[in-house]
Image (tube, rainbow, N blue to C red; front, side, top):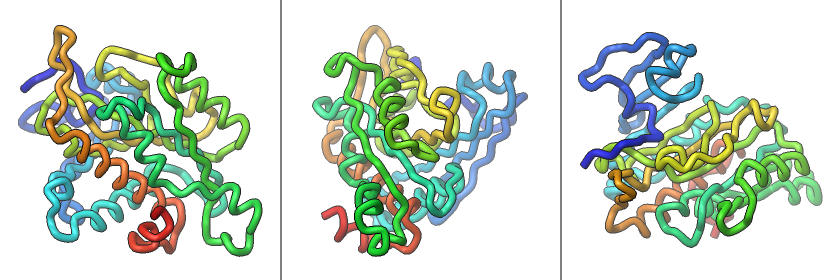
Length: 271
């Protein structure tokens, strides 16, 4: 099935390989997962891929969603490695995690479900600094959507960032793919930020370093295909897929933010 729009930089690359002017890309295996690493270098690259200048890393997590043995901890550790690679963080930097989307609409609930699996530690660091010395101060917000809050996600995140003054922001959102084969099988990380809803033609205000004044990392999972003529397609088992995606990303964030934690540690702390 083919749709009209995509949030995934990997889907804008030429079929059959080859390089585009202003774009650097490569594909390889890492820890048993297929990686597509795309870097948009200049304005020409922006026009070619219809994405802002930045780096876009796509992890194919088919093995994880098929419940292959040991796939979850391997995927969590790999995701944590990429978060550390793409998001500039010093040891004591405060991080704001923003879960975008509508928790009442399953394909749009990746952000809220990720927030539920991410450890909020800013208050603990302030109250018990010695006991939580190994943790970074992490704040978490769920933005809701314009139709239910009357506020743009960008307005909410900017207001919260103004209150807690993070050194970096991570935004989590559901994405749209062009190919149905990628639905709930791919995680994309982008250091360019995000324009919520762009994949399905419902563009909201962007969330980026330009807007917030600190590095912004966007993490997303495609949950829908825009089939055109107002039709949106999502997998039959979307409920379980979205829960799995939220847990995966939340655990990856926890390992990335707090060196020394293991997947088992996070199981105990989140539970």
